[in-house]
Every structure is written in structure tokens, then in C-alpha cells.
Image (cartoon, rainbow, N blue to C red; front, side, top):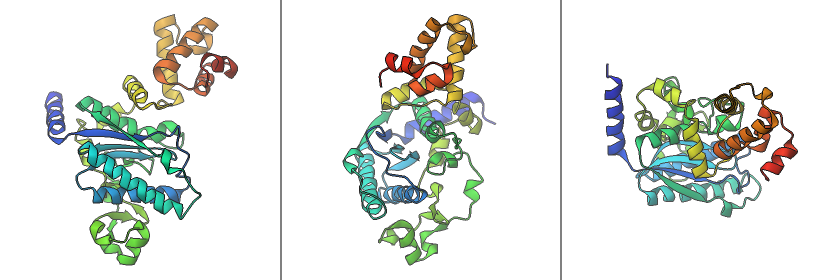
Length: 305
């Protein structure tokens, strides 16, 4: 069995030989909801899978599809990564147009940021795999079906009897993918009518950046400072759940005021705590209201929307 240091050196070796890595994302603050139904999400994830197969120089390490934005952790050169995004955008624009209302796709623009260290890559993978978990109380980082997180360190998922498009037959394959040149993507797998994530997302590379499954699991809940830095870099709004934000608030209150009980803080202390949560941890006014039981009008005056 390898020691801690040996495992860490192996992760560093894999990172150094595998780069470059990028975080490609779109801005949900300016884009309207374009994935509104389960069928929309199936279409979008399939479109991403098809684009990935077509852009063989780019590897998806993990991803998360949200109703109004996306996150992709990619491996390849920046030009090819942006090419993959444009291919995805073009397919979504064409396919969703036949299913739903008109969407202003001009607002669906991508930014791409380099990931230059192993620690940064670990944090970015975790940040993306937590995205839906933070946004919705209905998911864990392991259960969201429209992202790579559910496939990380998941031997059960890899045992599902997924079938390749070749096995599914030409007509069924076209129905599943909305794509004519099936021979170009015939190794892509589906489980039922949902594209099989391990057939296009290289979670094996992502997993190799962590010492083991325990290291990955611990990182999901113990990197609030790193999540804060990433959120500020991406201009994301919320990146901690209420429970996680409460833990941060209690820790700050204890170190600053000698009291972990937020309800017992005086008004001046609560205002100081509000500023810490808002400016350092991107807590929204509503999230602060829920945690500190403050009047929303006070928070809106402190932090105008």
C-alpha cells in the first residue's frame, strides 16, 4: 500500500503529464432558463456527449448542466475547448428550437479559465460537482443526474448494462441523439434513453487527481475558502448551502466574539458577521436573513441588489 506522500507524488505526476486543464462556464445571471424539463436535460447531455466524441482532442473531466448555465472541466488546448462549446451551443440551438419556446442564444456565451496546479484542479472539480447540491436541497453531490459528479468513485454506476449506439440500431440511435452520422459516434453508450456518462466523461482522469475516494469525499465538504475564491473568479452567487454557511458563520462568531450562538449576538456583531458572509462567502441577502433572522429591508440597505 502506498503512503500518503507516495499517493500525492503520483497525483502530481499524472497532473503534470496530462495538462492543460480549463474551467469553461457560462453566466447564469444573464441567460434565461433554457433547460426546463427532464427531456431538455436529456437532450443537452446527449448534445454534450456528441460534441465531445466529435472533438477528440478535448476530454471532459467533469461537468454540470444547470437550468440556465453550464460548467465544464476540460483537458485540451483552449481553442479546441471553445470549439467544443460552440458545437454544443449550435446543437442545443437547433434541437431545443424544435421542442420549446424561442431562446436568446446570444446570451449563452462561454468564458474559459486556466487551471494551473493540482490543488486548483481538485478544487475546481469539487466546485463543479457540488453545483446542483448547493443550488437545490433535493440533490447530493452524488445524485444529480445531469453532471459528472454522480459517476465519481461510483463502481455501481459502472455496472449498469449500458448499450452502444451500434447495438441499439440505426433508427433508435438517431432518435436518441438527433444526429445523422451515427457511425461517427457509434461507441457512445446509453442506459435506456439517457446517455451513459462514463462513455464520454473521463471521470477516471478526474479520480486520478485525488489520492483515493476518501480524499475526494473529504474535499466535498472541507474547502469553503477555496470555494469562495473560485466563486469570486467565476462571479457565482451561491456556493455554500445554508448548513455549510451556518458552520462558517458560527466559526467566525466564536473566533471574533467568543460566542458560537448566532441568535445571541448583539446588533453590531450581526452586522459585522453579515459583511463577512456577504463579501467573503458570497452569501445572498436571503441566505443571511435565514441564518441570522434579520429583517430583509436591513440587508437590502446594507447590500443593495
